[in-house]
Image (cartoon, rainbow, N blue to C red; front, side):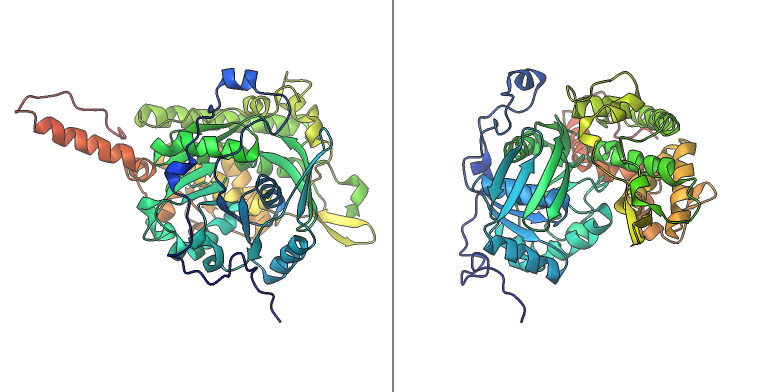
Length: 477
């Protein structure tokens, strides 16, 4: 017999009877992240004050990051519901809930917190209509199916946050009829290096980032979303003005594929002992670091071209790999002199192994069909390459990694120098959403600025026939 959703969710109240936290009750007088605030912040974790009300939160995803969020948010007294894809995972979560909840073990400092979610389900209708905040923390390739399943149940005013995912815009075809009434945020990356060691019951956090960046639409809500997220996660959050910046600046987009290539490009096809599996970040070579720096150069060229042609775009979040690592792990990295040393001297990377598949008798083979390629290529590098194609920017190292990855995965995205392969429809490249010029693309990325520019022009025409200087175009193509 299927297990039922816990009574805390599947009670007799109708959706109209359920109490809901209004958005204005989320407001707080706590300071948002600034360098000065960070300097004054207490060194012990948990120093950010909790949001005043009890929030109803849906964590959509039962992976490593979902474990940390579920346990941490519940430990702060919030009502946390898990939305996971498979019924057997629901059973494991419900078993953990019945056994007393989920322990989050922060390895640094040997600190533990414990929280008990109120329920777990695989049916969005069980939880989505009744929560204030939804955080999607699953591999990017599952984002769109998850959001489309949620869309009929979204209600105006809800906050929907996605960790990574290349959401450079919020297409109504994906987010449903309430798109314009949602507050949507993309979180640049997962705030922790973590691993769930006992599903639904125990997760270890090896390292926390010192800063996480987000972009929010509508942008006017960015500071408040950042404030609430940093209170929930005890990590500083900084709001940027452009979803496109988050889509292009998530370091997993280029770091994961480059490191996979570095470790396994020369693999001979034969199983090898598990003891020979390289640590994913810690064991990168100088060749991989050089590739990362070439990627940095290509991203910088794309950023420069976009800023020149689209002056209203805020792309300040796009930074070189070394600079991002120093922001994330400042004070933890012991040698910040080079890109290679930033990886090799980060103690949080000492235990994170490369993805492999056991084939028996202690032997393994590389796992190419892992999110480092099957998500970070179609929802990372392919998206970047699609933007570059619109902007007329060449990215040869990006092309190289896409071609290598599509061969390993049996996919087809890049044909010659064009993104026109048979699997393009399952990416988030702008071409998939009928964006064939940079101007069309930017109008989706920046709908608020597009509307504002149009209103400014109309207002100028009504000012007694006096000719005013035109505001800057959204995109000067």
